[in-house]
Length: 282
Image (cartoon, rainbow, N blue to C red; front, side, top):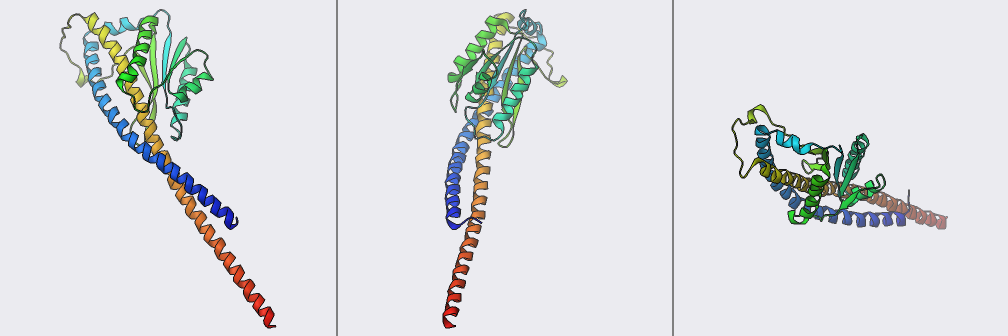
């Protein structure tokens, strides 16, 4: 068993670590609430936009097929990751998902990365890539230059397919890596959701589609960033809470060992005193 000095030193060290993890937990809790609210607000807009695109697709599916035609057959991959660690297995899960997906691509491809963790990972595996940075609480105005740049590249280069890899926020305890195909647009709806009405487009269908598709791409990228941010703060909250609980349990165990060691020391000293007294009497 370690001596009293070693046990006291370990307890002080664990108490210091516990205070740090508790502070990180409280910071993550405050940021998580704001990030979750942004995700829910963004999803409401995204669902309405997807409904509009679904109506256009049902009445004029050729618009989407013509947009996705590409002779170069090149693929664009957008990877969204956190900037920092201390969030459990979230970073490793999204990087593992991205690595498996990139290895499965047989065509020529380009990569855009948002987040320091993804940039560090991609820089070790790919030579040519572009990286972007966003804050802890990104706004649409902040992300707009990034989404506009990517949208312009899609129009200029003419990618056959565009995929985005990010962490989908499900709940505080659940975050899932997700691969979403942005282009060609994939519309999934039930038979009950189909609308048989004819739509009139003003000024024209081409003009509406030219404005609708870039907005869809930019909104999807922005929502994926919000999902990733909310997932990061939620995962960090859970990880720091577990770390704080483990530190408190370890502190209790060490305190018990310290009390046992002190008791043994006191008992040993008493026995020495009693033994010495008996020796003097003899």
